[in-house]
Length: 468
Image (tube, rainbow, N blue to C red; front, side):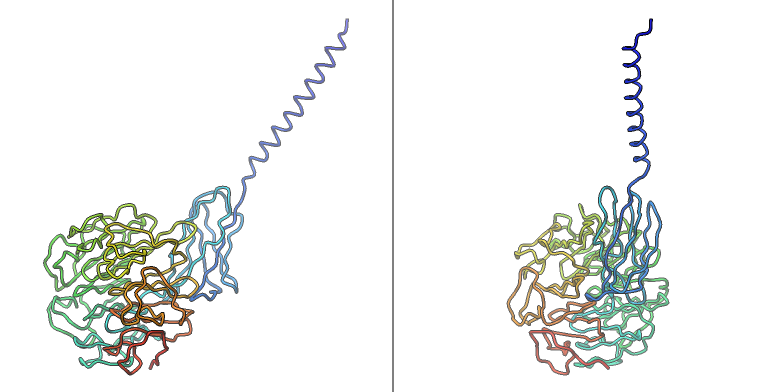
């Protein structure tokens, strides 16, 4: 006998199972279509957009795009994964940060911005060096050791052309000697040579630039007080000159009159030389220091000198380094923005942390962000932001902060008299900036004519100077 009740139940169960199966299949189908993401940002120079610039995406996918008229770039339909966004440098133009790491998982990556740094186009101590758009070099200010490279030791209160330099790509200045990098990878030096800082194999002063022998394929130079540092395109670091505090990183305190390779560090992407210590950035985002540490400028938690490179603890994802007079600074890639960290001498508030307490380990400068470059002076510091504004802090006795006063500042303050800046430099007691229209502006002490305005009168606010 047929059991109609059982048949109905069976049909009902079958229908339910069919519905459930359909739901499962729909869910599985949905899982198969992975969500796609967007990576976007803006590229600027001195706050102005850069159009037509190539931007590459590498990692779990490889894509290329170009910035639009407003400097914006965009990668669409990017799968979940880990990526690196890199704008392509052109001419003197480099970017801060040089790249951005992106992890796509649940949210689009919006606002991954870049700005030009024009690294190496300006240098300052008690004299100045400026790289012109035609790749020649200007100099002015103190010249007691021939550091202007004009063939004499006469001080100059106006910019003059350095003798014999063409096709140059970067400059760097110490108190008494100067360095320049040529587009063929050679290094040139002039000025004081008491400790062999010119790298020529002797200690003879040179009033005009001379090529440092046996150096080729170099991409960066840094002049410390009486010593020199250069970065080769293979990631090795080469040093020469004074080594009284182990600032050459060779494990000794013996000076070198010719360049030698630092043996214990490789894969370096950036260098900076302080008065008597050195800072290097490796490709893995770590920071390494060596040399004098009286003021904690090595950032290792004590004041012990190191004659060989030592890693600065807890400093990772670093994209920029800068060394000053007993101070060190780094730019850290925090994914959403760039933060600034500092350590070392702080007697005049030059670390920008709101106090005058020395720091033997890295400390963050508050919520100070959107910074693309740090320029330490003797006892004051400058910072360049992505919008083309310049910020300053520290000693201000000669108006080097450019805020119209001589009042010391313990935290960053904006210099309101100059905008559209693409690079800047902090001298011993003055400051200089290059704007995106090619003009140069100076302020602060002028005892040696370092403001370049033809006088020796100090100035408390930025003013444009004439260039030849």
